[in-house]
Length: 184
Image (cartoon, rainbow, N blue to C red; front, top):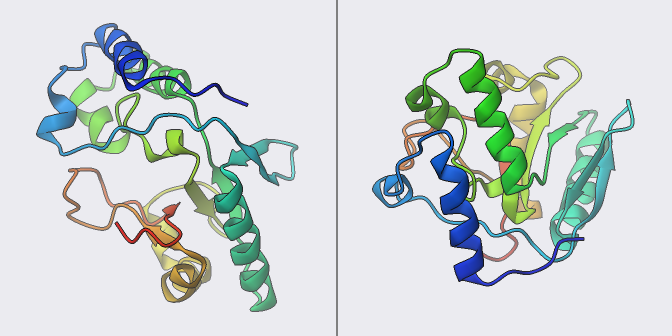
């Protein structure tokens, strides 16, 4: 459970986190990024085979469970690879990549800056399959991706980052976001 914070507190926290890796404060506006404050309520949406707990907002969790069951009914196995992640965890991901020698510019084509990842909002899901459990562009060649492309919208899930998306992120066939009735 997370506590709701004011916009001012959220942006102050994010601005502070930007300083360490040197993320330019104007980056979100220059890339048309949307801030994603963390929700006050999260529920367990799935548990991996190795016991990892994945959390989402309640309506997104219900949608994921229905989507996963419908895919299974059609003989397609979907694996949740990632779901909610905190602003601080997003900063840790970026920090680890910097420590491995990746440039910040490259990292920010693959990962959203802290505060601007759809995962913070509790509605984004990275999806894999038994034949492609690691996220990557190869996922688009799986039966799981083909099933999602044909059926996910029925459950209120949409591919967030198609090729040549307006945010400048790499193509992410594994990253889907629950939007419910909100088609934006």
